[in-house]
Image 1: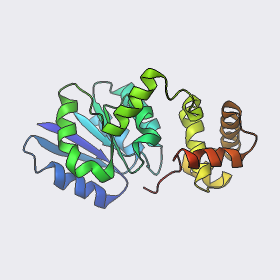
Image 2: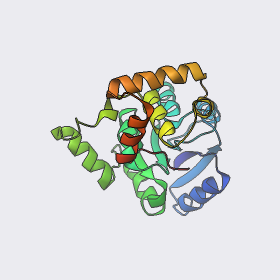
Image 3: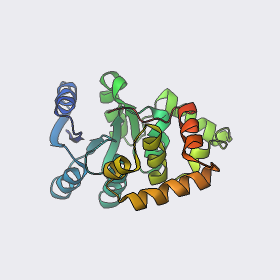
Length: 213
């Protein structure tokens, strides 16, 4: 039996995922968490074979939760399940230790097969993500400026490009406005942009604007 922890702040999505998964006799949703901290605490107290992790959580960004989960429980498999397209967080999730990254819109068709493949010790890669990995391998994506950014700098770029103010970004990231300003300055410097407008134009052109989860 594969014991799964579902981490998503939307109760309807958790319910829908549970219905999809428990049609399979070898899969059991053994726990649900609404926040990143709750998920981490549950993993400390209870055994799970696999975590289905959302990117947008109310307390911690999913990438930060992923890193902490892999640090504390390296043997637990993690599939990132999000509304954000693969182009936005797919490669970053894999590099941070996820075994797969699946867009929620395609989850009903792919999820059960992905879980079984991941539990067999393999990664589950969508066609879109496979193309990105291939481009990285042959060097075709080296000109993508955002790949040089840290996760925090990248998150700042995405949130800023979605029209969020400095105050709103600091609230979403649970950081002080001063700290967010530092990330924004580093992002602009690394990407060679003179101002926010240039960064926003780049993000829109490369489809990095945050979707609403």
